[in-house]
Amino acid sequence: MKKLFSVVALCAIALTSLSSCEKIEGLFGKGNNSEETYEPSDLTPTEHQAKLEQIALDIIDQIDPADFEELAYSLMTLSERLPEDIYGEEGDWEEDYYPEEYARSIKNFDVNSIVALTTRASEQFIIDINDPEFDFGGYSYEITEDGEVIGGELDDPRAIVIKWDNDALTLSWGENKGQYTMEDSEEGVTYIVKVPAYIKVAITVAGKEHFSAYIEPNITDNYTYAPAVTVKLNGGYELYGKSSANNKGISAEASFKKNGTKLFGGAVAFDIKGMTNHENWYYEYYNEYFEETITYISPEDYFIENVTNGFAQFDILTLSVIGNGDLKRVINELDALDERYAESDGSEKEYWDEGCAIINKYLKLVAIYNDTKEKIADVILQTELVEYYDEYWDETYTYYDPVPVLVFPDGSKFLFEDFFNESGFGNLFERLGDIAGDIEY
Image (tube, rainbow, N blue to C red; front, side, top):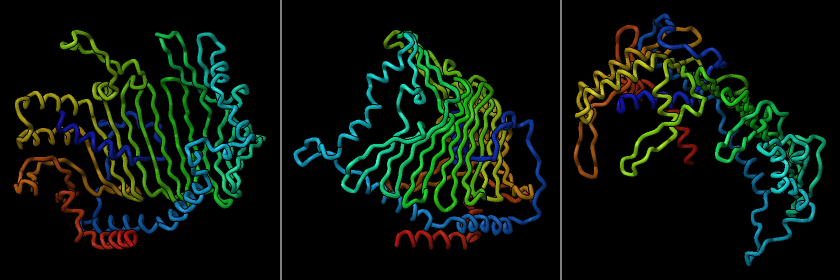
């Protein structure tokens, strides 16, 4: 399993990092038994190339580089307003940067006061930024052109603002909603973190908001959480991400939109019981050298041993790639395959052929047009002989490797590298070349 399952893992990681559906609730259980069927498209592989190329060109047309140039310029402008050096020429502390008003403003970070507040209960250590005694929010700081910091107060006790003329950095948060508890059995102390409903960071330059990040922790208890993040950029761009974890499984989604239109998206979900219980992550083994039992933490091991079904989807405008399957059967049969080839280095064609057959049997991957629900092609793994030229040793090596293959409804098969070539996607390659040239210029 160690070799072939790594291929599956890489695919899952790639889908997870780019992933999103509009909702992830209900994704659990979308395994091999609930595989959807799609009507095959009447287009030929060549016609699919033209349609897929147009989708890629539409994505490029939606993204205006000028929007990001404006954002980069605004962030640079803001950074230039920050004091660059707080030390004098001889390395002494530069008192001019810290007038009396600023010195008073940092009283909220008095460690002794925080410790006294959080240890009011003899066996509890409570962190709560909304506790009035914490005295954290409700302050503004204005930095003048001379670097002087002038402190002030806000009507909102859940906000901190740093201002430079019409530029500002704002941090705000909501009322508490949920908490996270950590037990320290050795010290006999319970650590309780009170969690705000949201945290927002915003950057305004010349009176215009160029960036904002809205974070929702969504912690119900230690074993149920669904954090979400929404990042908005000038130009109408929005990046959204959400993950969810409970004792039934884990999932994640993300999307990238412009003016409300989703350009990229996807989602992943895995059925796995008990993954959020950290006590399940502990493993022990006997170390013969030290003659003692070693305890280590490995959520990866728990995932591999206990995951059952899996689901993944990746969207680019009207194109979707959807995968689902019985991960438990894949893991078990790849483990058995490795045992049969225990004395091998995994270079035999037979090893890879058997491994690909296992993955193709239990994991189904299909590309569709999500607006018409028509199938473009199935995606399978196939063993191929690969050549690699080592310039240092001036020698060519050959070995077998699993590669993805597109299988179209008409029965034709194409390796990915043969289908997504310059002849079939000439306009796209030309456009990307023009963009690269502009960036270099």
